[in-house]
Picture 1 (cartoon, rainbow, N blue to C red):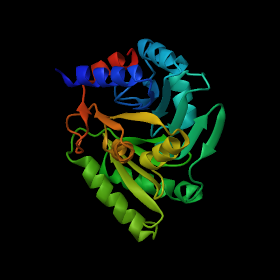
Picture 2: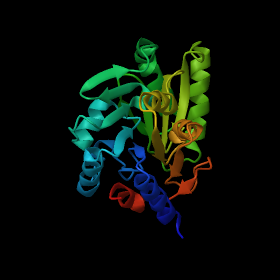
Picture 3: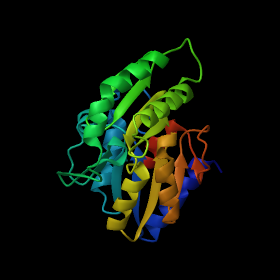
Picture 4: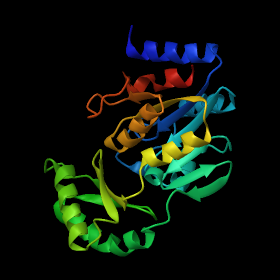
Length: 253
């Protein structure tokens, strides 16, 4: 039996036993294919319809988790149902029942101050562009002439933070062709754990595809949940590995 069938069967067993299921979906690379232009990563109609059905089903809770800001997630998904939970900016922001809150308020002004210098440093290593976010610094690499640029830029940015005595306040996060600077205490895992504590007695499933999801995948496992990867090259062993094209089969379960 393929892993996707095993996962669907496990979900169905939980539902027959009248267990409630909390589904955490990473956005880019899971619900939406990675786009060269991040601004065009709109939620496909079929996926949106499936999510709405899940949200309306009292057996499920649904959270979308992303490095994107809440405003960007709302614009790309056009999901207005107040029962969906948005976790934005890698766990910095939360939107639930129409109310916005923050998991952290530290080091925002610090990132804003270093952004111009950090951008110069990034451009000196690789061609790319800055995705403006109010709480983090995200540089998208679009350089095909050089190799290992994520690692190279990550090392350079770490050096930059250390030289500016910010390495104890800020950290570097590597992803698919991106390098991000954000507060030390912020992570998807930290945010997911806070949500889990608010919704006990659920079965938790996290769907991720990138190194930025590893902290959340680990947290879900800690709470006896299920970790699912949509990336065979993800350097973290999850319970299930499924192909991105099968995500809609999960949403329609």
